[in-house]
Length: 523
Image 1 (cartoon, helix red, strand yellow):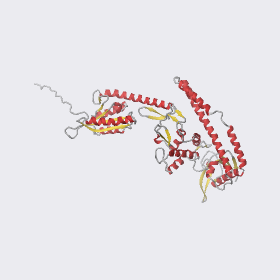
Image 2 (cartoon, helix red, strand yellow):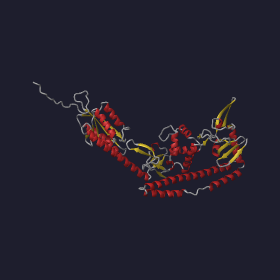
Image 3 (spheres, one colour):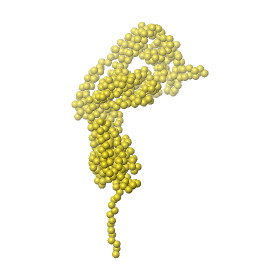
Image 4 (spheres, one colour):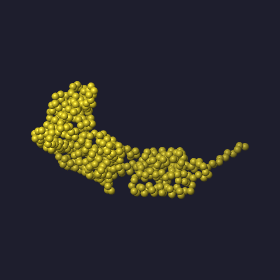
């Protein structure tokens, strides 16, 4: 007789997430994960409330024990790269320190569908369930993954919608001229209780120093080294200054009381990637939005100087000569034969050491022959002393020349006024709002706005250029009137103040003053 087949049911005994440990009745080690989205007071309360809630909730289950509260405060949930507590919790789960995870909702756990499911499956492989209170979903349930896929996708859409709402809110504030600035690394300004920019006096003096030294001829590297030497901290509160710090300060329109809004924009709501805005999304330029540290005319002079220093001189072979401030004669001494700069050389001629200036064409291959003479530095100094003294000896004649130069400057006033441009820009702004639904016309008006802004900047630079030339002429006049006797020794600061350039010829030197006066000096 054949034996009767029997089937015996062996019920599951292992609880989800419970790994075998010492002890007869081990408790389920339960961890809670909580996160708040912002740093506002209301969310801070929510953050504290979540910690209190989960501590009490876990302790209320006699067969559970608290494995930890993992809380990320004020960090985005759209990806897990910067969520330190979340990542620490996952590591502890992988290390066998946690049997179960509880969290408020899918949107608290992750707003990225892929991230959410990947981590849930990773925990599921370790037999660790995740329970979502709001949705009442257990990841170990047979229907859990289907529900989670749907819910996580909805959470991602919610995040995208929230991102769009934030953008719209920012756009509205930009249109109202409201500035959103993090002052933690912004040298010269802080915010008051109304979140308006206010000047920090001691920091503002550092900003003024940077602008002043740059216009006096110092390079960005020299300015940075000077600030380090004097123990002055940068905007981030660090002792080390980089040329990039100086460059950003010299270009930042906020120091003249203006603000260009939406310089960058977010390209991906999940990764929060921000890139420079090169016209992809609108920008808003707010004039006089806060108190200025730097006068507008000084700022514009710096912008012009920044452009000028990119290419100080182009050699006949096409090589660009960059700005140098290592010596007062750098970029000042010009070869009358080939048009190249002279370069400073420490010369040892038959055991006799001296400092001389030689044409670059004689020092490197510039593509042209030049037999310009080598000039002792002391000779150039004496030439400049002679040139300055010649103006002092015949000051009445030179004062008359300066007066004529002033009249020439005034006769070149531009007919186009800034008032006319500003008036037209206001009109175009009104037109732009009306044409929001007509792309072709909208783009046409937009192009006109950009053109007028460029024209406005050009007119501003012309006005500032004229004012600067007037200032140089007046400065030369003041020097002639205030200097009673001839100078007897070389004065570097006086040379930087008065002299534009010196051209070296075989039989003479031509000295050009910043005021427009030119003199030939023969040895």
